Image (cartoon, rainbow, N blue to C red; front, top):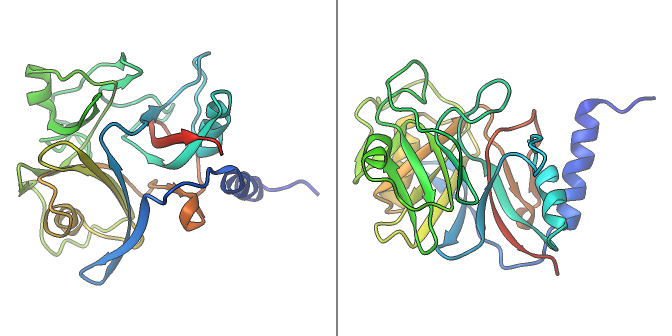
Length: 249
């Protein structure tokens, strides 16, 4: 009998967990206002990267494919999640920089959908610090980013919630995003483990985590790979992926 697609994805997820390096666990579970979340924290200077395509230009699209590519360096993912919106063919919707090379330009006009709910923003991984910056401000004064991904909307901007968020909204999904500390030395990636609205998700970053700037990555398609927690979410191929990398033991 042929294995179903879902069965194959589960087998790949299990193999990813077996191959994961045994390192200090950066991810933990928490709750906020009675809702469950998983957080993964990274300090500036760590080997945090964005992944989209291999050297031949072929889409990676999954945590397993990223791990396979990293194995040629003797490295593996410590954790990873989807990192920004993408077109049906998995091309990034907005700015995308990988290994210092811009692969897709910044998109500034307002548009339909979450990405176009201005202000949106850019998550930048620099050599010595992280930043989450509103897109138009980034366009006026670009940062030197080794990696960058544009997504939207912004969740928290200078300590204030996005002005279009509605407290108590019934538009709830599994959501994920990233927040950055005021000094740029700490980035916290979060995924909700139950459906939440934008306003609650944004307040997690601001009120519980104390992060003045935070960016939404996506909803419904949000996935996390956290082997230290025994977690390897499966699903359809993704576009940009962010992941913490470490040498294989």
